[in-house]
Image (cartoon, rainbow, N blue to C red; front, side):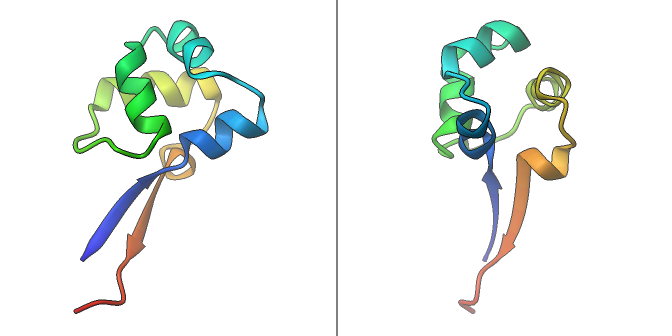
Length: 72
């Protein structure tokens, strides 16, 4: 099983940004940003990813990572 993981918490913590600050600055709903921060998002809306990447000045590959599971 392959997994897509959000690195928003890592990025936010390193920049000392709160979820609320990110939501306001990126013009995204707080709840969506919270889910990404906590890595509980099931689906990743393209418009939200675009806004977050623009606000944080990161590439998609820095915000989201793809992990391969060692399980069969």
